[in-house]
Length: 318
Image 1 (cartoon, rainbow, N blue to C red):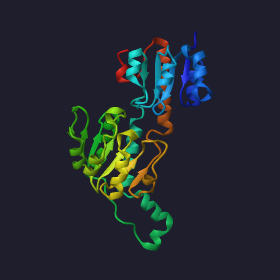
Image 2: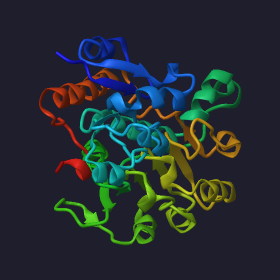
Image 3: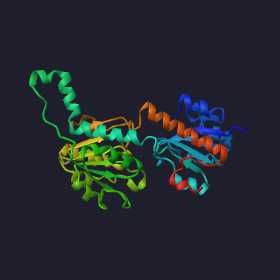
Image 4: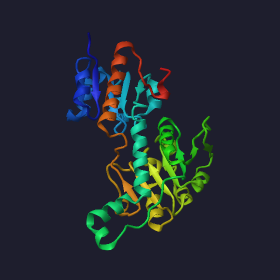
């Protein structure tokens, strides 16, 4: 049986490699010193790419692989892959939806609770001895009964709403089109932000959502409001976020993603109004194993019959 050439962008676990190497001839981009020279010799033989949501496939790499037929992405986000170009060339693209929904929802709750309940301050109060020396920590804010807005009510957004139910919230949402769900729909994001105590961003990245959470949205959330971003750093205007936090026009921010990852602006790191995570929304052993398995499943299914197990919507018809 032939072993198609596969270009790997980013890393893979031993388990993933153990399933890939018998079926594909794997070329690791990280081990190619001069890609242009390598592509001139080998690019035409590459039929598949395995990548991740952060690295994607650059236009230069895609152009250097004239016979590329499939791209298997590790992660639910795929805005770093030009799906329009892939559709035009008949390249099938997959991602790993559903298997990370629960963990990203857990991370959302973690950020919300840490922010509202002053986790950073209170843990430092306990560790420093201030509790003993100065008395009890200041009061914090209960998560119960809040109005929580969800920007992007897809699979993960719905999972977040489901897990928030324990706090008896009022759920509202903003998407491009209204959905058949028991939550209040807002077609204007600023108006929704005015109504919210907490705004959760879980919309896809890309040009259509770039800086959709702007100064007007952040100021509408207000000095007691909290922004949570577990989607893409590009969704939030980072300069406006810093300005509204520093001025007190926005109360809190819980951030797992940033515009220039892994760089985090010093102003966000220094702020007492932020809870920051290093893009670990799905980063548990269990979830990453499931994502890796599905990434490989897509490649093996493509090799077997030319189809993908979980194609991205734009390429589902190919």
